[in-house]
Image (tube, rainbow, N blue to C red; front, side, top):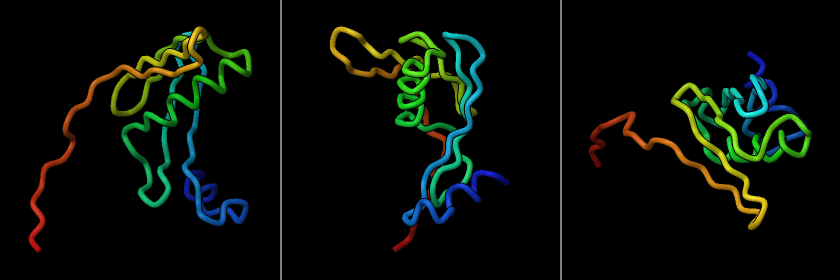
Length: 101
């Protein structure tokens, strides 16, 4: 109920994605995603990477951590030497269909 209210708040005229986060430990974060225009989704790699950077800057996480999402776990690594963020995790089909034109 909170996701759609934040997504459509007047503060975000073009709407926004919303992530809900729980810090389980300094190396394990849990995230649920409300995707703009789509609702709850299984995962958001960009959001998981942004979550780790924000958690590190906030003093809540190490630079390498597991982010657990409804679709599975991602390993996020923010490298100090290059300042790049790397994501490792599974990529699996979740839907198959046909669209007639």
